[in-house]
Every structure is written in C-alpha cells, then in structure tokens.
Image (cartoon, rainbow, N blue to C red; front, side, top):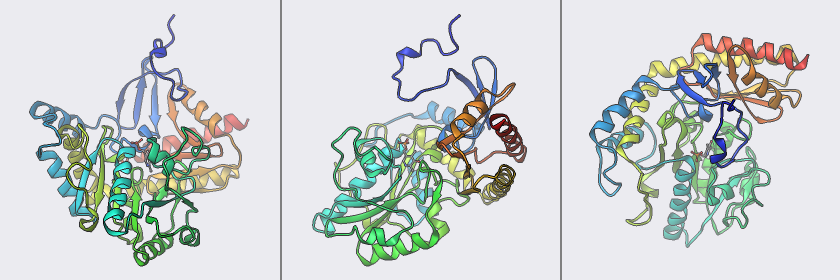
Length: 396
Ligand SMILES: *Cc1c(COP(=O)(O)O)cnc(C)c1O
C-alpha cells in the first residue's frame, strides 16, 4: 500500500510535512485524499482571506484567464490599474508596484528606501528592524528579520539591518546614525507569536522618524487587507507611514503582493525594479475581487464580531485551563499557554477524528489563530469546543 503521500521524495524537504495530501477546499474546510475533513484555522498562514476557493476568486480567475493572462509588466493592463487605484484611494499611499510574494515586496521596499537614501540622504542605507521580526526568506529579507539563528544561516548576511526592540523607542533612537535611512516593522509581529506594536509606539516612531528624516516602512504582509479589522493595521494608530508592503490576504490564496509608497518616496527610475510576473492581470483581477469584498463596511463589521467572539472564547479557555491569556488584533490572535504543549496540540488536532482541526504553534507555548475572514460564528464555536476537548485529552 502506498502511503497517502507517496511520491513526495520528488519534492525538496523544506519543512517536515504531515503525511496528508489535501485535494479540496471550501470556505473554512479542507479535505484530504482519504476524504477526511479539517476545520482550517491556518488558512495558508493567513493567506486565504476569503477561505478556500471563494466563488468570487474562482470567477475572477476564470473570467480573466479567458481574456488576458500576462502581456508583460512592460505594458499596462486594466486589472493592475484597477487594483492600484483601489489601494491608493483607501490608503495614505500614492503609488503601487505589484509583486508575487511578501518577501519580494519587502525586497522592493528595501531597494526603494536605499534609492531614496541615495537621492536625499547622502547614501544612507541602514534600515532599523526589530528583534523577532519576520520579513521573508530572500537573503535581504532574512537579514532584515530578527528570527533567532537566522543571522548565521546562509551567511554572510546582507549588511545594514540593525535590530531594535519592539515597543521600545529608546532602543530605536540608540541605533540611528548618519547611515540610517528607515525603520521597518510589522504592526503586529506575526511569526514572533502575535505581538502587537502599541499605538503609542507607532505614533512615537512616526514622530521620531519624521524628526530624523527617516522613512517609516510597515510590513503589512500578514496584517493588511482587513486581517486586523481595518483595511490596514497602521490605521489603528492613526499614523501615515511612507511605505507599506502587502501580500498574503491581498490575493486570497494566489501569489500577489504590493509595494505601496507615497509620492515623495516613489523614486524608482526605469530599470530599477521589475519582474516578469509582476502585476500580471490574472493575479491582479483576483486582487480586485478580494479588495471589493473585504473593503465593504458590512464585511468589516462581521470581522469585528468574529474577532470579539474568538477573543472571548480564547479568554474563557485560558481561564479554564490556567493559561496566560490571549492577545492579538482582529482575526490574528494567539492563546498563550502555561506549558509547551503547542506542538502536541497541533498534532492531536490534525489527527482528531472524524474531522481534523488545523492549528499553528509559532512558539511551543503559543497557538496562533488565522481563520478565513469569512469564518462563521458556528465554525469559531466548533473550533473552541474541539480545542477544549483536545487540551483535556493532551493534558490527561
Ligand atoms: C509571510 C510574511 C512575509 C513573507 O511573505 P512571503 O509571501 O512568504 O514571501 C513577510 N512579512 C510578514 C510580516 C509575513 O507574515
């Protein structure tokens, strides 16, 4: 008998994957090759903003693929124009460059900041980032990240990313020198375990960067597109950054990302930035469909209601089991446990029968919840009930 995942040796082993092959998805549910269903609270790591295989995404892909797939980024196409106009109208930014992944958008942000430094700050190039930050897996974005151990992986690093401490303005101030051009952060550190930057910190950081003529870059790859209950997480703090990156939720599951900048900072010249797939109309058409759904006021109201429900449910679980509470913003939340049973719970949840549950433990004592923004009240209740039973099972 071949295992369910026979033939996997042909794939590079970039992570240890469970012996499950998913064949179908709909909304908050996935189905594997054996017909088992799973309630999905990972959603491709907050990628599937509308859940699996949303009809609007299917329709956008089908319609656009019949019309035009990729004329090349050297020419305009209508969906890219439409999506850029929507982002610009809904944000403090004036210009958008589309990319294919969060890491690529962040690379673009780093290049844009360095270019701006060459033009306006005598070649300043250093970008202050934060301990435990996650910005992607290219060489520069790994260097910008503050994941423990990443400074030695694939050494030497790309130079110029000193690390400050989140929510500690003095740690930022202490790193600023003549070569500093920008500060870059996630409004909520996702991979680090759902650690929000406080509104006060973001406001102080904006004031400090203005005073020292530095750019402020927000990496909203995980927090953007209504994940936190507002279209963009920086809006909670009432600040206006200079540069923002989007990915994950903007494509609702397809590879789409965006680098957004104010007019004053949009200093790329022809030849500075590009890429064969960038801004292709097939992905941009999906982006337009996703954008129109998540930016509707009634959609955001539902996200608020679901996030209140999830927060209250996690708080109740924490109280019942003597854990250390919950945290997060909108539908990006974490349960902080009193022991390191995250990995055991993740496995037990996946192996649960007859239906499995997909959870993520970015740290051993922490579970992260990133459901579809379209998750129903019933699905949240189901997840909470199953998790309660799983904790009981694991803790005996
Ligand atoms: C996932 C993530 C990235 C990387 O995005 P990819 O599309 O995987 O390259 C960058 N920044 C943040 C905050 C992320 O959560």
